[in-house]
Amino acid sequence: MRIQLLASLTIPAILLFSGCGGKEEGLITGSGTLEATEVLVSAKSGGTLTALLVSEGDAVTAGQLIAAIDSEKVFLQKRQALAALEELRLNRLNAGRLARTARENLDNLAKKSERIGALLDEGSATQQQYDDLETGRKAAEAQYENARTSLAALDAREEQLLAQIGLVESQLRDARVTAPISGVVINKYLEAGEVARPLAPVATIADLSRMHIRIYLKESGIARIRLNGGAELSVTAWPEKKFPGRIAWISDKAEFTPKNIQTKEARSDLVYAVKVEVANPEGILKIGMPADVTLL
Image 1 (tube, helix red, strand yellow):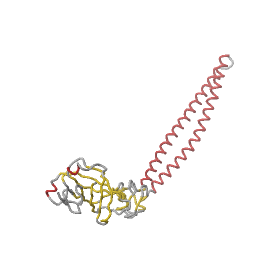
Image 2 (tube, one colour):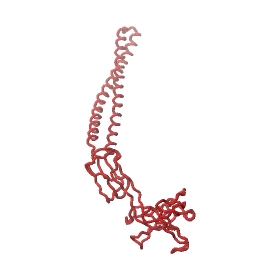
Image 3 (cartoon, one colour):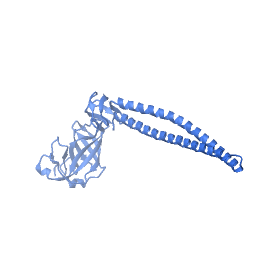
Image 4 (cartoon, rainbow, N blue to C red):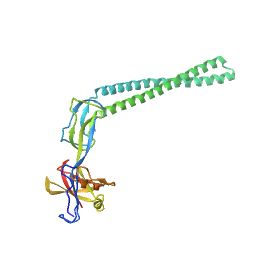
C-alpha cells in the first residue's frame, strides 16, 4: 500500500500511512503544523496601564514583570491602614499599663479586705471598715475587667487592620502583571496609557522550548505505536535536519477524520488523534510551520 496524502498544508494535521512503497517498509508517518503551549496573560485588576514592558517577540521568564496597572489609590489605602495599626499599638500600650495598675490595685485591696476580715472576727475592726474595703475591692475588680476587655477589643481591631492590609497588598500584587511561564511574547493587546478591564487580556506568551504536532491514525496504525514511543520530525526549512520527538498522547476515542481533509471518502474514516512532542532548544521551529512526522 502506498502512502496517501489526505490534506493540504493549511490543515492542522494530515493523515498518512505507509506500507511497502515508502523509503522504509512498515513506517507510520503523518504531517501537520507545529503548535506550542500558549498562555493568555490577563490583568487581575482594572485600571490604567502605566507601563507595558514587553514587545512581541521578546523572551520572558516566569515571574517577570510585563505590565503595571495604576495602583496609587490602593497604595494610599495601605498607608492609611498602616497608620491606624500604629495608632492601635500605641493605644494598646496605654491599655496595658491601665490593666496592670488595675490588677495591682485589686490585689492590694483584696489583701486589705482579707486582713480587715480577720480583725473583724477578732473584734478589732468594725463591719463598716470591712464593707468599705469590699466595696472598693469590687470596684477595682470591675475596673480590671474593663481594662482586660479593652485589650481584647484592641486585639480584635488589630486583626481587622491586618486583614485589611493583607487585602490591599493582594490588590497591589494584582496590579503587577507577571509572566506565568517562560517563553516568547507572541501577541500583546494593550498599550501603556490604555485602560484595562478586570481579567482583560494583556499578552499571549508561548513556550517555544517544546513544540507539539497532532496527527491522525487508523486503528491499524494505533496498534503499532505506544505512549512515549519515539518519533522523528522534519521541516522544509531544514530538509537535512531531523528533530527527535516522543509520542506524548494517544486518544482513547475514535473520531471522523477532520472536515478540512480534502476528500469526502477520507473524511468518513474513523481515526485516532496522536500528539507528538519535540524539543526546540534552538528556537528554530515556529508555530504553524508544516512538519512531517515518522513514528519509530
